[in-house]
Image 1 (cartoon, helix red, strand yellow):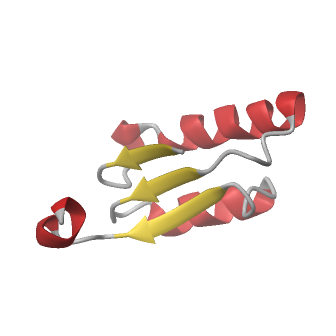
Image 2 (cartoon, rainbow, N blue to C red; image 1 turned 135 degrees about the vertical axis):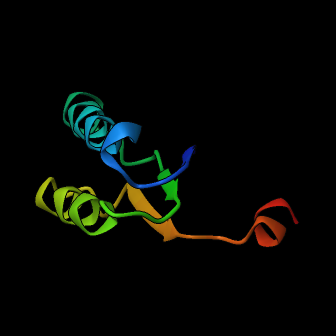
Length: 73
């Protein structure tokens, strides 16, 4: 499992990560891998759409915002 924790905005480079995951999945299968994105932000809807367009729903999970208390418990 690979996890990204941060705001879903252009500066975070989530779109680049999704493209890398797409390439990894095409090159290596990657069906036994899981990539989790934790956070919310102005680009979350666009990142979800991009992941769907790339057919990454089997390996990418968007958890949305998780409170600090829940994250560390």
